[in-house]
Length: 117
Image (cartoon, rainbow, N blue to C red):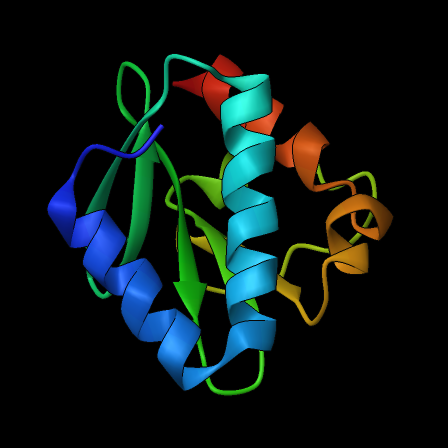
């Protein structure tokens, strides 16, 4: 799951800064790997970028939330009405707690992103 030392360092730094946000990041990462076991992960733009054939999404920890960001989020069907953002392409889902992962149907959006890749 994690072989990149930059990923390990970012997780370590996050654990020191905010264990609550780390729990949300770890839960979102675990979901991605459970859905897409062949996904790769790298540190980019201060967060965790995931890809299969192409980039799918990124997980970014901010001061008050964790954001799962989709580079082509504009193409995702938003059945749960949780996508935020008004840019040309990018959309994101804000996670305040690990409960939000299920409540906001994050798995559905990750699988859609993979299908669009």
